[in-house]
Image 1 (cartoon, rainbow, N blue to C red):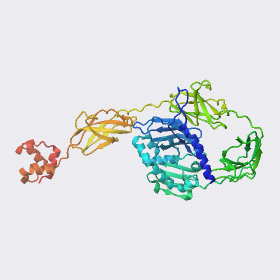
Image 2: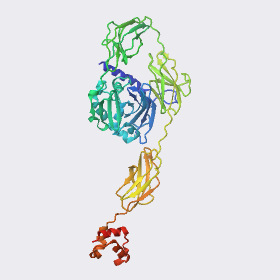
Image 3: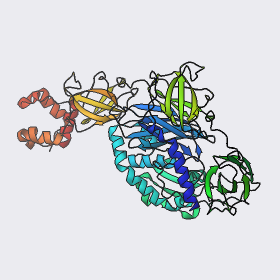
Image 4: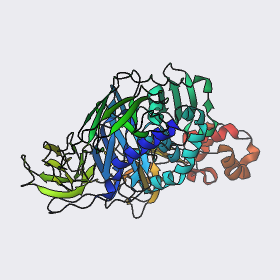
Length: 577
C-alpha cells in the first residue's frame, strides 16, 4: 500500500508538470500564445538527461521541431500544425555518459524517452536500432511503428515482468505512463541495470555485468531471461531522528535530520496525541524544514516523520508536537516565485517554476529587451508551469518574470530569466545530381557505378537501348545501389544509362548519360559445322584450319562469303569429322 501511494503521488506530480496543453492563451498579443497542442514527457536514464529533444512528424516531407531538456528531465514541444504520429530523439548526457534515445507519440500527450522506449521504437519499426528509425522517418515508417507499438509494449512488459516487479514498475508503460526522474520505481530500475540496443539485439545487464535479458528486437518474446541476475532490492531507510516542531501564527515548522539512503520524506499529523501512519493525515514528499500553514489558531498539532526510498517507507519517528499562536495574520498576497527557468526551442520558449504557497494562479510578463517588469512586459495571464510560449521568432532572446496571484493580490515579480529560441532549420532540398557515372559491359550484363550524392537516401537507374535516355522515356530501376549489375541482357547490344539521387524531399535531376555494350554471342563451332559445312563436303572427313582457310580464300563452293575469323576457323577444324 505504501509503494502504491508513493507511485500515485509521483504520477500526480508529473501530471501537474505535463498539463501544458491546458493553459489559456496570453493577453496582449504580439508574441504568440501558449500552445494547447504539445508532446511532453521526461527524458531520463535514472538521472535526467541534459541536452535537447527533437521531434519529427509523419508528413510526406517530415517537419522537425527541437527543444531543450529542463534540469529535471522534463520537456514539452509544440506540435501545432504538425501531422501525427511523431517520432522523438533525445541527444544528451547524464553522469558523464552521452546518450541518443528515442520515443514515439501517437498524438499530443506524454512520450517519455528512456532506454526501454528506445528499444520499443526500434522493435516496432523492424530496425536494428532506433536511430535508423528516426533518420529514415517518413509517413509509411511512422504508420508502421504506430501499428506495432501496443503489441511491442505488451510483449516487452510481459518478458521483463520479474525485473519490473522488483521495482514496482510492472504496470508502467515506459512511453506513456507518467513518471519523474527521482530514482524510484521505473527510474530506480534504470539506476541499477544497463540497457543497450546494438545490431538488432536488446541487452539488459546488472551493474556487475551479468546478463538479465538478451534477445533479438524482432523476437523479444523468445529472448533469454535470467532472473537470477536481477539486482537485489535496496533496503528501506531507517526512521528519521532529531524531529522537532515549532508553532507560530497559523503554522507549524517541522524539521528533522537527513536519513541515509532516503530519497523523500512523509509527514503524518493529527490534532490528538498518538498519531500513526494509519490515523494521521499524510503530507508526501516533504523537505526539511517543512512549514505547514493555514492551521487553526491556538491548536496543538502532533507529528511524526517517515523516510522513503524505492524499496519502501521506514517506520515512524518519535512523535513531536507544537501549538499554533492565537493570532492569525491578515491574508496577504503570495511570495514572489523562485527557481524560475526558461529554455528555448524551435520558435518556442518553455518557462517553469516551483509552486508558491498560497498562490492560486500565475502571470508571466515578457519582452525582447532585458529589464522586463510587470509594467513594460507583455502579460500572459493564468499560466501554469511548465508554460510553452509558441509562435516566437528564430534566434531571438526573450526575457521573463513571473508573479504569483491569490485573492489578496499579486506578488512582486520573480528574478528575470532569459532564453534564446533556436536558429531556423533549413528547408530540406532534393539531393545533388550523381556524378562519376560509368557503365561496363559483360556477357549478357552491364555494371553501372556512380559516386555518392550529398543528401541522397537512395538512387534510381533509367536505361534504354537508344541513346538520349531520360527519366521519362527510360525504364526505371528504383532503389539501386552502386555498383549495380543489370543481368539478363541481349548479347552484342549497347545500353544507355542515367542515374538520379532521391531523398524525402524528392528526386534530383539526371546524371550525364553513360553507355556500355554487352559481349557478342559465343561462337558454337559444332553447330555451325553441322549447319553450314557438313551438308556439302562432310564426306571429305577431318579438315585442318589451313585447309579450310585455303578453300575460303579460293572461294570454293562460294566459301569466300562466309566471313569467318581465324579463331572461328580453328574452332570449326577442331570439330570437323
